[in-house]
Image 1: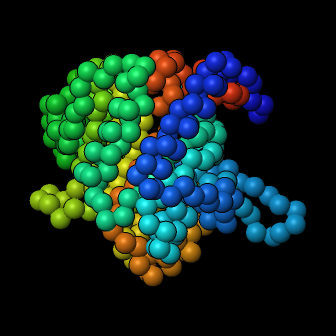
Image 2: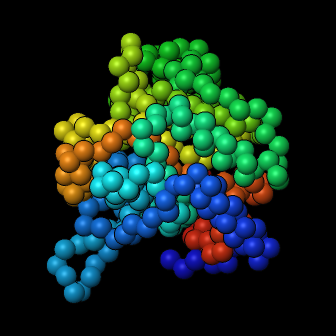
Image 3: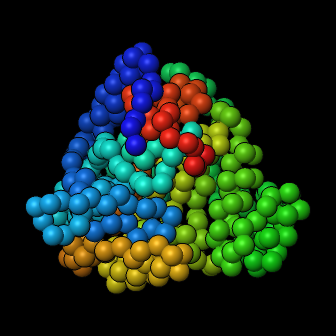
Length: 324
């Protein structure tokens, strides 16, 4: 796969300016910039994300390119770093389309002793500050996941598979042959919820179902929900954030559960980052973290119609699009 030229030189100059502005935002808040390895002996167990494998003739162990700097950054926090941020390239196999590239730039940061609500307020300040010199934001909204689903489907998010499938069919949405309600909920968000957002609206969806918690802690509400949020500008997802899970036993259980799901999908089980688990056992302070797709943010700022317009070299210009 050979990447071909993408963004104009003028776009690259703007991108560099916005990177400087990003670093200034965190410097003013005394958040430490860090760097973590791109190569690791472990890989993501997330069934929806696939890692690139790297072979090294000088060592027996197989390596993987990281799909996120999340786990090593949390290890730094457990070691006493305090608030940190990172801007880095990340790599995901099978990601190719107008809004996906197999390598892209991620901005990730963590705030100690914060919850997801506090972090949503900070990311709002960051995003609004980045976008509004170039484009308008008509409103900033926060909507609970279950409310967002019910608003477009007319049925609760915790409905049965049959009810969800019928509600989607009534709206002419083809449903996959799956026994997983979460797959239908993801489909609902992609096909109905996101298109319902105004083109200049900034929208947080928060309080995800526990089954979609990923690395987020579960809030002991009735019913329980995951302390997780996603941020959209128009219908484009910009960020994914958590009130971070600090329980090592629960985190290890989730990693094993994700590997079981991967195996059921015909995917290989992935090696778990046991150094991260050990760091959780040592003690991760309460914190909240968020990952921002920096290329997508540049596209939102400039009104670009895809990532190929904002990255210097685009794989999507060379290969057939496989994912929108």
